[in-house]
Length: 181
Image 1 (cartoon, rainbow, N blue to C red):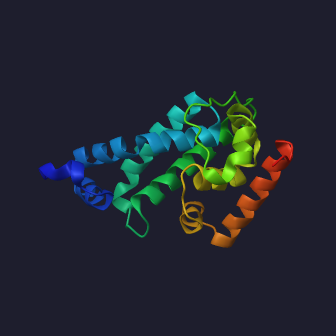
Image 2 (cartoon, rainbow, N blue to C red; image 1 turned 90 degrees about the horizontal axis):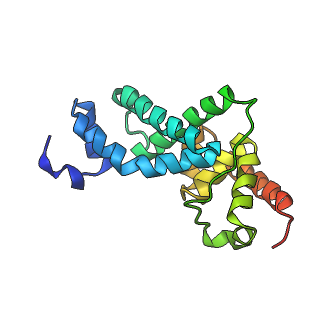
Image 3 (cartoon, helix red, strand yellow; image 1 turned 180 degrees about the vertical axis):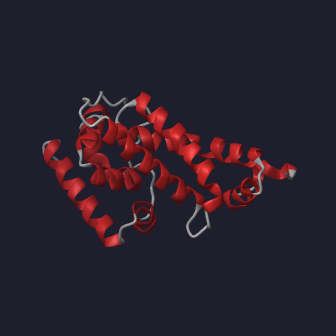
């Protein structure tokens, strides 16, 4: 594998990894591990589960990498895997209570000042209480800054469906957090 691996963009690293260069995939893991874990944490609400989801997502990505056809970005494809792994994990522990969500890494966007004033722990707990389909769209938009089109690709729905899920999520959060603005 060429020595300029660190400067290579994802598409180049994916091609190298598909050609059997495990170092290229290791570079992709290093590049995306924080965002994968952060997304898993916000979707599952539990640090230990998020660790498992992140690890399982990378294993699934490695196993499926030869099937990746670059019809979307690698990042979008990886988010799809994380969402699927989180879905599977939450289904398997459906009857277990959700632990308190850690506040580390909570950095609300400028358009969410009212939510941020309510307190990070309360907000994150309210997000975890959203129905999973709303929570997923909300996390990908607010925390990961994906476009509606990218979220639609990740979730295999239309951009209009994304807008609807985000609207319902915001309404629910407003109700849960007291409706103050």
